[in-house]
Length: 260
Length: 363
Image (cartoon, rainbow over all chains, first blue to last red):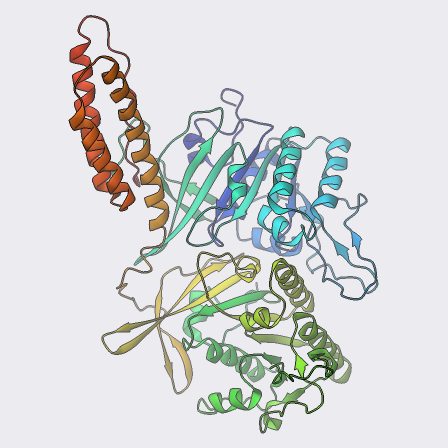
């Protein structure tokens, strides 16, 4: 720990952040689909697990069985990461009541995740709303102390779990809830390939942005710190690659001028 | 890990062997890029291995789909095709429009004949829910009949599905639910999607587990085709844009080929972001100069030339000439700083606000 900061699990990123993340705050990791957000957030949890911390991954985009499979491509031991399946079931259109994801839902350790997808039960389906998720997390945070939490993604939460809520206000209140819970949280935000960042990007204490550019040599990925409240940080945009050991940021020696 | 072949060897090579089974993928690209051909080739490759396939067609009626692929000589007789093209809307008041779910039309490809005539009494409307219900029914009926599951499904296209059904926020939830439904069927699914606007984040693009994107450009008077993998969860992939062509045996990808990127449309991705950042930097410099101008006024110094320079810089920002704006602003900054320092001989000059370094990519 440097100045009480915690490591992200990516050495180059820690350098860009001048040591790491200030704990107990929410942060945003944004980028277009396929830019490496989930990999980055998994690495963040892995770093925690390796230090004996309690880590929770809240999956809203992909079923946990697939995340488990995908992580096999990396040389990671992520078995102790806890996984909360917050994917909504197939929606029902009959007037039978849907049950919201309830406080009885428990996260499972990655090692215990089944290889096949959870099937929507015939008579009731499980729907996640921003309200039910918040309640559930609240109970979980009281029951046990989580050190690191990832919400993947806040975009899915906004798109699929706010049917009757006002989107930006609700997102804001959800982020406020996370800030008050004093858990270091990474929230992923899906960005369109071009155009402007969605408003939730402005609500966090810091934003790490991933960029995906194409040229003759293929996809080139870049990372930048868009903002970081309460800490100095690197202003430049750095290239990074995804290897079998995860994301590696190529940060040049500190003090050197930028190559414009 | 087992992979599912797309039926195109070059594309399989790009995907590191093929698609990871039992997941939904998006095939995107402009009209006429070859999306439907790839989708049919994917189904044909499955049939050749004895894997049952289902084509859900929303864009073209089955007879046209059939006619369009005859030329490739694939054996698609055993392919099931589900006609989800909407009927001509009946514009009569009392006649309600019925959901497509209530009438099933699934048939073998070799049974496909003429276009289905719109019902005289009630027109069928297509909704995501209706298509889902129909798919579910067919999936389980087949399992009961033949004890085998559909291994490969194509939905052509999800863009049509979205347009036919209700728009707004609900359509996102519907698409999420539909993709969850497809995942639970544990079939490998290709969702054909037309890219409409890269500035809008479409649900299927971030929920899919991979995206195969087709590109089409005009080079002189020749159409150049190319393909790229934009995203592929849980696997390595070749991230270059590779040349492809449509031959009389279908889509063919040259996995070693190089595409000269002309036009700069592809390379320009991210340009907007860099510009926005540049704009912010220039604004910071201008603000610092304006502060110094105020100081100068207080000290009764002549700075009209600086003020002119700054308004020129602001004009450049408006025209999005960020480089020029930056140059003008930085120049004005250094001039006024020098002048202020001269004027303040004696007391130590206040620390001038440092100019932020221009943004750039450091390697």
